Image 1 (spheres, rainbow, N blue to C red):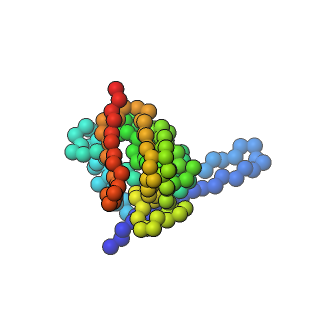
Image 2: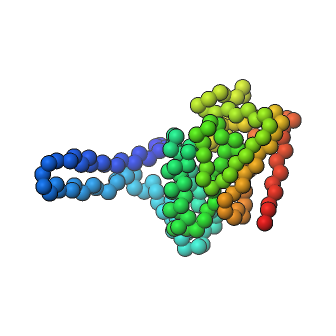
Image 3: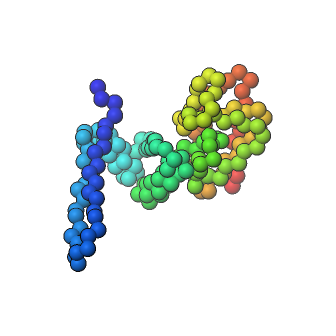
Length: 173
């Protein structure tokens, strides 16, 4: 069974020539190896647009530095917001695993002695990393996340540990 679908995109490179009227080449549309692989997504997207979805549409975008610094994901989030309504800021690191991890929909402040472990930096001793490829351990401190728009719900995911920290949410009006 195939677990991933490859997206094949054909890119035509245009070269500048000295001719008076160069012809622009038509770039063909992207083609999918398995077009049916996106049927469930298209169905969920249509349900969101119609306003009769049974649950939120969640999209995970995995990438490298352009994802970590929220360049591509912010632009995608804005386009989806215009199409479907504000879906919130999406995934946010509690404490970023490196200085390049930004988020344009959240202001983030941390204090104290948080130790941050990431897939591209220092691994934690138990080798357990979360969704964003990082883990934060607390030596005594706090994290404050402030959304730049209204938030109606928050999903907090964490690994419970003996003598672990506590989480508290505060809603300000």
